[in-house]
Length: 333
Image 1 (cartoon, rainbow, N blue to C red):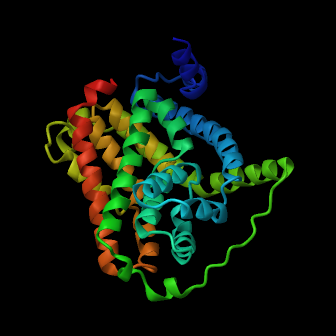
Image 2: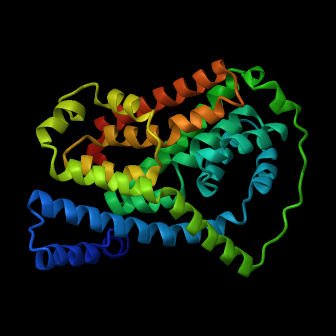
């Protein structure tokens, strides 16, 4: 009960929802049960909540991340091989959430260091899809059971994907110039407490600057879905009435460019419309792990066959995850 109370007050910010309701009804003279009033309430509440949580979470996580720069992460991953390496790579991906724009330097650095290809891909799958900030935000939208399940399944997908790539022995499909780059073990200077605080503040500013537009777009789409699109339409397209809903949600999500922060408001609106949990999970995972810009950047360092195998493994994994969640969603409700 204490956990639920803290979750409602700190993460879901029910007090903020009530304040925005009063603003909409008393100042704007609208009812949140109407389409316009409901849309305004959804947009203002979700936007403020996301940016408050993002600022706080990114600061804390960046402070932790300051202990795990790429050079140190590389040294840690060097020490383990096999499935243990894949597991460690996936776990480190959760506390070192590099965006898609970092995929090329990270891939080059890890490859030139001689890390197994499977470990590198476990890291690359986990890093954009599963991190501590997404865990907390998911809890604020869907509760702790669904949030933890998403993170656990994401980690499993990263480990399995990396393990399969390692078993297929695809090292020859890495671009030649990547392996020719000499690995240099740069000394990682130890940061002081003040430097870590400054670094964390910079990360908050930089990440908010990079994602604010996607958050607003995501919240806007979520508000439209929540208040303007009839539930019957949603159910026919990606609801339980469509047996191909998971497949459709996954395939449609791949060309999108967004991160977990921009997709959450859309996922929240779909969830409120009765869309199955597995379909929503597949949507979020595909957008974050297989966004078109990240695939384009990855194509600069791997050959088409390796890229195609990577996309196929992750896509099939996401679809399987979606159908499993749909079948057992009652456990998380």
